[in-house]
Structures are given as structure tokens and as C-alpha cells.
Length: 465
Ligand code: EPZ
Image (cartoon, rainbow, N blue to C red; front, side, top):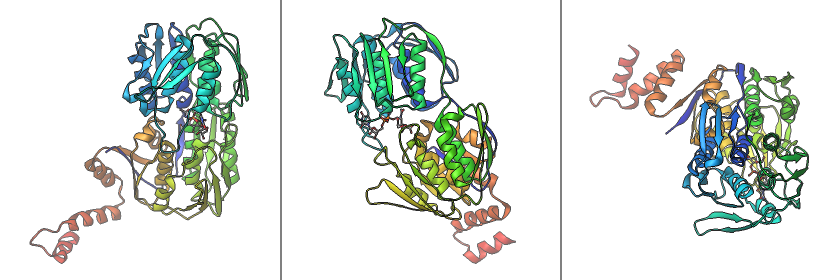
């Protein structure tokens, strides 16, 4: 039972360094297998989604050498099969990038598919639209894998019906070695889409316009090896920005691209917090009198849906009433019930896409459960603000996207640990309880199971004397 356990009430202060972007790295790992030459990736986040992807790449035959915790060399010339049917790949959505990469390189791919997930159905119709346009045929196999195959892949002008990060990246992967020119209209513009395109261009691809809504790809014969540092994680950075604001702290967040954080900084300024931008860092100072604001998620450069839960945790402690509209996923408010158990006052409209948040003066610590990755981060932020102790269970979701989350928070003065059993939890509580809390904890323990031959009065007498 892995849990985060924290004692709230301390403003976060100090410096934290942001790692590489998980959502860029997942597409980049797939792109790296499109050449037979070595590709060295730096600033790779050590999180479970990345390690699952690396295992899948290794299990189909590529050489994967971890040069250090955040640097990996991939040499894909030894790939034996284009069938990625291991059960564990169903755990990560981004396994579908292996379809685009294997189809693009070998003209055939078969990859076990994930189902929907906590935040939504997560359809892949736009990915398929792109593959079909390029000349591939696809089918779902009897054991729920997606099979894609093409005699040849030919560039096409593709009009996406939905702005999709995954589909944009997957069509880029499938088209970089295709014959001729591919144009992707209504492309996603997220920083991680741009990072995948930058890596592919470093490998010899010819991609223009990544970061705009029209991406042009001229197919090339082959790709070559390179060394590439993953872009800093916009969402990890934003999460620490919100944690600094929620705890009324003062945190310098290093190794970021401030441009990627502008819309998050803007919301913090609207709340009355302060944000100072430097070349590769931002400094966030909270404000005990922070006030309400409204948020509507939308594709980049709009407010990131992946920052929505964390922002709600801050607004739940701001003065006034805030509204959050989630326009990307159909079920991204699962954390609301848990925050309300901590004392938040959040209600959802009937349709479930708008949350009304009435700011409260504080949270009370309790036991909560992470329903998904970013909701788990939001519950940690809430626990760091709450009076008393908060445990967050099901942190396997959080470990998918945050490396050393408790270590980094402790570096900012948070009283937060990862515990795997009751004993470790008790040790943490004993080590952090105030004297009066200690006494109370001891008294509760002493009276929890009174000895058979002692009355409660006698137990109390023994305790206080
Ligand atoms: C990526 O998911 C991220 N995941 C998500 O981050 C992020 O929330 C999302 O982009 C939006 O920014 C990774 O990069 C691994 P989409 P993705 O395709 O690509 C609909 C996190 O917390 N859609 O941009 O799956 C879809 O239902 C995760 O790190 C279709 O209708 O998101 C959604 O409503 C959570 N058909 C919208 O588009 C399709 O074929 C945006 O989804 C594809 C998507």
C-alpha cells in the first residue's frame, strides 16, 4: 500500500528543478526506434510510464542502454518484431505511438491497446484517420490489439476533426518516411508536439510548422541517430507553481521554459499571487488573500487540462467563487469528492463539465485516494495546505508522471513522505507531531484498547501521572 503521507501547514520555500517532459518523452521514445542508428536521449524523466515504454521497446528487440538515471541510448537496428502485444503496454496510453513509428518504418505494426481511462473514453479515431489517409489499412485483432499495415505510405493533406496531441504526434511518426508531402491541418501545438518534431528533424526528418496548427512533413528515405535533450516538463513545473501558491510559499522553479508557462502564470497573477520570470526559471510567491478567478481548459496555448485539478486545489482556498470549465475530457473532476472531504466547497453542474468552487479558509487532513495522475497531484497540494495529517492512496497514478515527488516537496520544506505500511506511517507521525499532538496521539493509542483489568478512568490516571 504505497501512500504519500504529509503534515500540512508549512509554506513551501526554496528551489526545485524540473525534469524532462513525460508527454514529450513518450513520443520521442517511439521516434527513436525509427532509425537503426543509436539515439541518445537526455533529461529523460524516471517515471513509470517512461519505463514501461522503454521495456516495450527492449522487448521487441531494440538495445536499450541506460547511461545514467536520466540518459538512455536506444539502438533499434535489432528489432525482431513489430508486434507489441505485452499485457503491460495496455497500462499506458502512449503505447499507441509505437503504431505510428513501426508503421512508418516497417509498414506494419500490431500493438495492444489501452481501454478508456479515469478521465475519459480516449478514442483514437483521429489517429486512424491519419493512418488511413497515408495508405494504411487497420483492424482490431481478436485480442484487442490494433493492426496497421501498408504496401506503401504516401503523403496526404489531412484535416483533423479534433485537435489531438496524440493523433498529431502519431501522424507525424507515420509520415516522416512516407513518399511525398503530408500536411496536418488543425494540428496540436503543445510543447511536447514541438519536441517530438524537433527530435525527428535532428534525426534527418523534414518537418515544418510544429507548434502551429499546420504541420508540413516532406518524407525522407531514412533517419539517422542523434543525441537529444528532452524539453522541460511544462506540467510538472505548473504543478510546483500551484503548490507554491496554495501553501502561500516562495519557490524558485528551475529548468523551465517560461513561455510554456505563461497561461499558468497569468492565472496566478489573476489570483493575486506574484510570478517573476527568468531565462530558465520562474519564481512564484503565494498570497494569503488570493482571490477567485475562472479557468477554461483548451488546447495549447490555452489553459492546459493537465493543470486543471491542481488549480482547483488552489482556488478552493481562494476568497470568492471560481468556475472551472473542463472542455477537453469528459471526466476530469473525479478529485472533487476527495477535496470536499478535506473541507473544500466544490459543486459540479449536472453535465459534469463545470465546477463551482466557493473558497474556504482551510482544509482538514484526512485519508484520500488519487483517482488519476493529475488529480493525485492536486490532492497532494491540498494535503500540504491542510491542518493535520493527510494520506493519499493509489499513488501509482502519480508515480506515472512525477519523479521523486515527495523528495522534491521535502526539498521545499514540506513534511511529506512515501510510506508502504502502518509502521512507517506511525514513525512519520511520531516524528512530526507537536508535543500536544504527540500527547494526544499517545493518549489515543493508550486508550484505544484499554487493558482488560483497567477501567478507562484508571487508564487516563496512569496516562497523565
Ligand atoms: C495527451 O493525451 C496527454 N497524454 C494528456 O496528458 C493530455 O491531457 C492530453 O494530451 C491533452 O493535452 C500524453 O501525451 C501521453 P488528445 P492524448 O488526443 O493525446 C479527443 C497527463 O496527465 N480525441 O489531445 O490522448 C479526446 O477524447 C495526460 O499527462 C478524439 O476524439 O489527448 C480528447 O477529448 C492525461 N479522437 C481530446 O481529443 C482521437 O483520435 C484531446 O485528446 C484522439 C483524441
